[in-house]
Image (cartoon, rainbow, N blue to C red; front, top):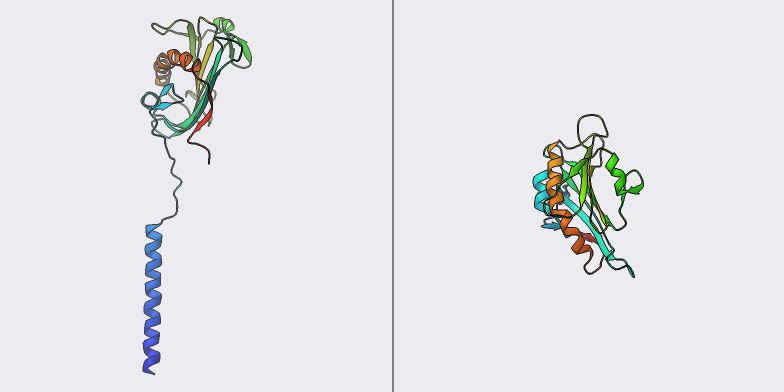
Length: 214
């Protein structure tokens, strides 16, 4: 009888201990939380300063991809592509994307491919950059009619007929940026416009994604 009582007590103690250990294991190894991981890179795609886009748009990158190359058999003709994804906005964070395209030929892709010169009749604000050859335009779009900016673009035509097209847009139509984002885009243009051509003309960079796909 005494032995049975002792065994029963031991069983109760062991069960309580097991429950306690299980509780501690859950505490030490909690379920993964769906937190967004941001990059700490100082330069995005080799041309966009991360600190500048953070200051201007409260933008923090989650990933980016880019490539650039020179056209075989066509000296002086190069291209550059970059796409940066992340979260922007000082209030509710917005899924935002930067897209950069640099091509020869004097064409832009705005509602279809068209000559850069066609933009002269569109009424866009001129983009003026000190000590940078060429000319450009900048504009913003409120696609929802709610007074927020859902898309900002600038384009730049270089003397050699290469065109740089740079766009920031939000992925959800019910979100957007304020008017100060346009000035942020002007500041970004002053850095990016002179930076892209020498990089595009340098050694080819095959498609690269950061962080690398797993």
